[in-house]
Amino acid sequence: MISSLSGAFLLPEKTFSLLSFVIMNKEEQIHLLIKNALAEDIGDGDHSTLSTINPESKGKAVLKIKQDGILAGVEVAEKIFRFMEPGIDFIVKKKDGELMSFGEQAFEVKASVHTILQCERLVLNCMQRMSGIATLTNKYVNKLGGYNTKLLDTRKTTPNFRVLEKEAVCIGGAVNHRIGLYDMIMLKDNHIDYCGGIKNAIEKAFTYVQTKKPGLKIEVETRSLEDVDIVMQTGKVDRIMLDNFTPELIIEALKMINGKFETEASGGINYDNLENYAATGVDYISSGAIIHQAVSLDLSLKAVIF
Image 1: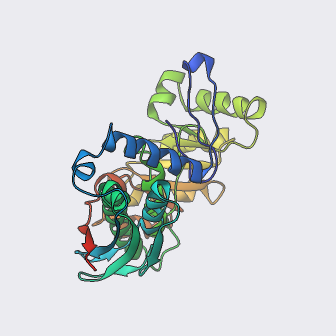
Image 2: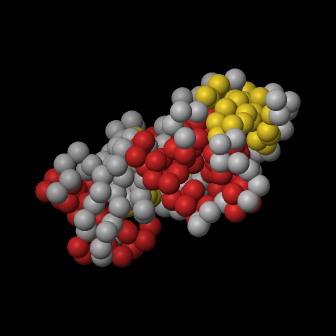
């Protein structure tokens, strides 16, 4: 399953050699995620609720914040509840992207008690994970203040949860890189090595774009200043990735590139050295850590008894 915040969602139905794709927009992707997640959790029935709660019972619950950070997932939470019960009352008290503090409330929901109990865990799982990502992302973004460098995420995401993880990155203030394998050509080390070198890989990719996917952007990974020189001689790309370059080498590479292509620093970059890389003037810094190193924040959904 491959998901996109900005357009195409491609779902292979057979084998890769006989691809048949279903194209979904973001809302359809989230709808599918919610449907599958609830089916996974509820199975043949929420027997805890079925055995104890009258199906006609109505209730109210509030989302309580138990840890400081950046709130993310409120809009998704409403979608989850409305998937089960379209006529709920959902009152937003804090919006996605706002600072949240211990003791505050994010929203309240009035619905069937069955709906509240069946959606509770999915809502919390999504919001806790998204808030953790948004908070860590925002920490990185704040350290880039004063520089022109933009922070990118990567494809190091949780399978089938990518649409929400990348949404959380945006809420935290960073920029989505490519969403999947389909929306940009990225010629990384293995592509280059299998293809017999950078020049050959670029030429093949450029021909592919011209004949089969006009408008698709090409990024190429470089591992040395010699690689950068080959790319400069070859051209035909949109962005050059400087992989595992020191800040000093990036400065040298940027002199060679001289603004002719977008530039991206990647590899060996963490929160502690982030500013050193931004100070080089590179256009983008990509970090898988803002997603895969994020720690879920503590939230709870509590019943309100009238």
